Every structure is written in C-alpha cells, then in structure tokens.
Image (tube, rainbow, N blue to C red; front, side):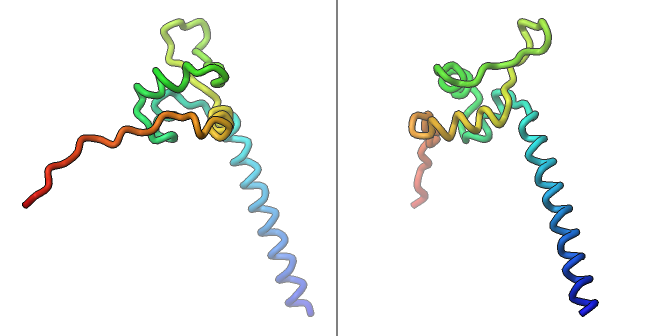
Length: 105
C-alpha cells in the first residue's frame, strides 16, 4: 500500500514537472522572432520567395524592425507566422522542384 502511494506521488510529481516544462516552452515560442530565412526554412521555400511572395501578402503579420533602424532586418513573431500559414495553407507558393537530372544509362 505504501509503495503504491509513493509510486503515485512520484508519477504526479513527474507529471507536474513535465507540465511546467511544456508551459515554459509554449511561452518561449510566443516571444520567438523569425527573420525571412527562418520563415523560409519552416515553409520549405527559398528566402527570396518568402521576401517577394509571402511577407508582402495582405494579412501577413506586421514586421518588426530594430528600434529606429530603417535598414534593419525585419522580424516576425513565430507564433503569428505559424497561425497565418495555417489559415492560408492553400494559397502558399509551391516550392520549386529543382533542375531535372540526367538519367544514367
């Protein structure tokens, strides 16, 4: 009986630690900023495609720039980009297939 209680207590304690870790991870992702290259990697597109055909779309999340730097690299909140992509998944550009390779005879 005591062994079962101890085991249950250990399981509850472990579950509490896992829940805390997941909550911390979720909070971190809300504050994560992505640049165009990171968005491109996540979408499986080139950085140029993202810069020309994705972030310029109406409804795409607003970009942030470093304080007062017009030439600073734009960044977007990762969670906003993911949410936008899920809502617009049918309208995203298709990745390029690449150059066809010659077959070896």
